[in-house]
Image (tube, rainbow, N blue to C red):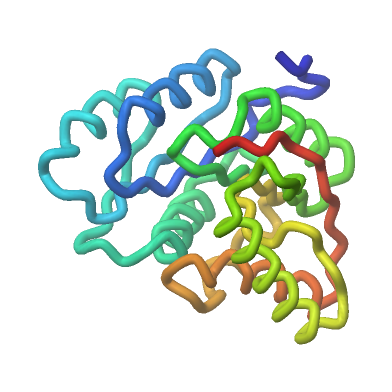
Amino acid sequence: MEKALYQRNDTYILIPAYKPDHLMIELLQKLKKEDFDIVVVNDGSSEEYDPVFKEAEKYALVLKQNPNKGKGAALRLGFSYINLNAHNHNYVITCDADGQHLISDIIKINDKLHETNNVVLGSRKFDKSVPKRSRNGNFMSRLCRTLLTKEYVPDDQCGLRGFPMKDVFNLISLPGDHYEYEMNVICNLQIKRLQFEEVQIETVY
């Protein structure tokens, strides 16, 4: 486990979830042990997943949007709630519900947020151990965004990201209901020339 250098109870973890399984519950249990506050957004999952979200309520506040609208819309809903209720919180970290992000890497993002007070992006290595489809998809995304912004970011699709609370309000109005929202966040940072940091994280599939 990566040793935490900074406190964690001033940071929200925001998790968009569509049809999650036990991996999300295991993640929530670990996050709660590390003293994070957690917001889960149920992105219109069908009723058969109600028991999973009921279990999630033991560890997190669970919001619901219905019907399913997509990851981007779920993130915006979570950011909107946090923006209105973050009286004692200074940061938000987004992560996925499927076990792709390690607790040690989440703590690394949290530490970098406290150290710099800048946006922090998780960055994975795309070597041959990563499925070809994922490598190709990330390459095309990087290429299109680099052509648009004239700046290179090695991983613009990683869901593990950290934001100071001062930047959260601007995230609510960004377009994109699905996975394009995450690329729009990167484009917004680059077009506005906002400072951001990158932290190397493990690649888990």
